[in-house]
Length: 164
Image (cartoon, rainbow, N blue to C red; front, side, top):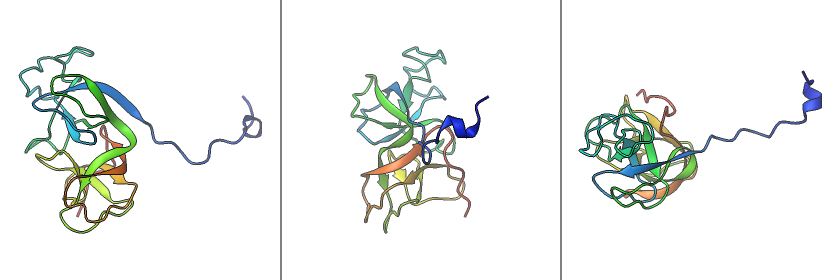
C-alpha cells in the first residue's frame, strides 16, 4: 500500500457527482430546466412495467409533479427541450441550470429548493416535510416567475427534509 506522501495531493475540494440519463416525458413536452418526476407509480397510460431500458418502463418515463407525491420519488431536470413522447437528456444529479421560483423576495446562495405540487420548477418557498432537492448556487433577484439559475441538484436522495 502506498503511503499518503507517495500518492500525491488529492484534488482541492470535491466534485458533486453529475449523472444524466435518457428519458421520455409523458403528458406534455419538457422545457430545459423544468423539474419532472419518474413515473414509478405507472400513472401514465404508456407506462406499463418496471423493466430496465424498456420504453414503457417507469424507469424511463417522466411525468409532471402532480398534486400529490412530491414528498418522495426520483426527480430529474430537463437538460434540453424535449418533445412529448420522445427521448431526451435528463439530469439526475449535479451542478446544472434549473428553473427556480420564490413567491416574493429573493433567492440567496445556499437557499434550499424543493418540489412543489403541480409545478415544474424548484421552489424556494420551502414547507415543513418537503424534500430539499437542490441548493441555490447563485443569487436570484425577485424570481416571482420560474427563472433559470445555477443549482446543485440531487433528484434521487436530495439534501434532507425541511423542518420548520
